[in-house]
Length: 98
Image 1 (cartoon, helix red, strand yellow):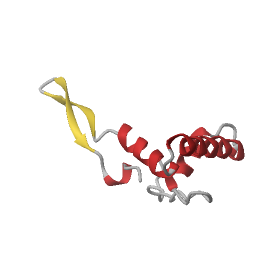
Image 2: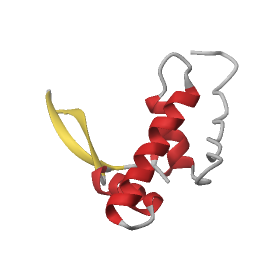
Image 3: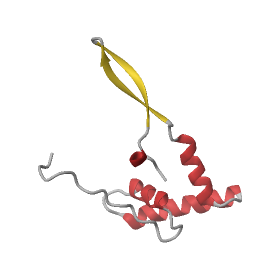
């Protein structure tokens, strides 16, 4: 851990096509070996396919899908009386997805 203090969080910029931070974060997750243009092409083709098949806005469909799979609470283990007990914790605002 650095002695200079914690580093500042850099904001994730929005992607140029959909102006969405979530799409840009997905592109960065798909990216391998720094091939950002290939990852962007894969994500954009997937979104256009979703738009063609559903007939709805692909960005809204994608955001709804991410909201559906995102857990609302997190389970953490704490020691209580010599044994591990699991507690439910709500997510902090900094860890939330847009």
